[in-house]
Length: 404
Image (cartoon, rainbow, N blue to C red; front, side, top):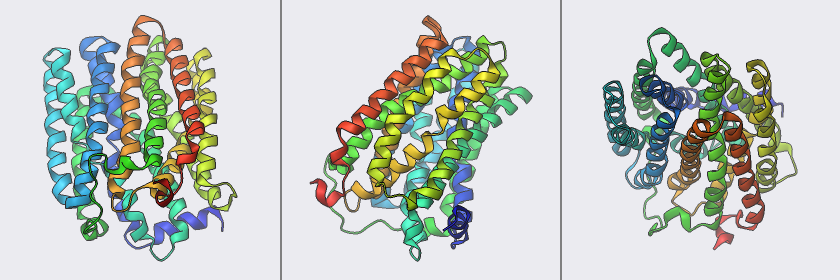
């Protein structure tokens, strides 16, 4: 089947387009918060190190809370979990804006960021658990649907930074940060009002998750371990590319570089979704190959002499990202324990976000103490560890019934 035909059939399925639009608005702040926090606190404090620490706190709050959120959703449903989370996010982001402009200490800023991050609902995981029901009549389209969802996430990382840069230029970074909070509430409410979300019900009488929950699956543990180093790489880039633009005397180009990087990832994801169903490779084989290839694309960035060259170099650095994440999400569907789908989807995302937080903080310190060149080399080096772990633990990426 032609690539366009697969995507058209997915978007033509009942309720899909409306659901994805609502989820897009709800996920748009994910692409805004990191850069908005960095630009806001860089303007208020003059320190990339402070900005990186607070951005890391937000990411840790989001990633650390996601598995608990997923487990609660598996038990209680969407509305009873998402509504309180939206309120929590609004509280944390408001506090960060107010305290940031008042010159509060880093600890207070980080605490607000942690609260705000913990209130970000696991919208991506919620959407992924809905695909089997949305495409019940055409299950062959589910792999392409995962790819489409991954591309939408990349669109978030393309559009989000551009919105932040535009709002910052017109009104200031504090307004960009506040707008992210408003969009999260609006998109979250629209998602909850959609028919698929209202119709979704927790699985009754599923297996007791125990202390480990979905982590009792060796395959989920492998995905968790491998996503941390990749997240570190991506998080380091969120700080390093703005630092590079600043060093080049064109601070406003940071959003453009991040957008091109994400656009390359989206292109890779669209290509993967269109062609992967026709391959003879298993999803496990794809995941391992892409995990090994991804770090190679980041090394040349350390030698970029100008904004124009960097804009070209971020394209090969981004092209493997969406295929890697899409293949990982497909593996979650395979290795997740029964009745724990929402929680299972949150764990790789959580580990990715934890890695992003570590990358934010580490890159901020490396830029401050050394240079953006060193930060990029560190990002590529840590990402290499992710590929090595995927290769070493490939035997665990099998269906849950065989994983023990």
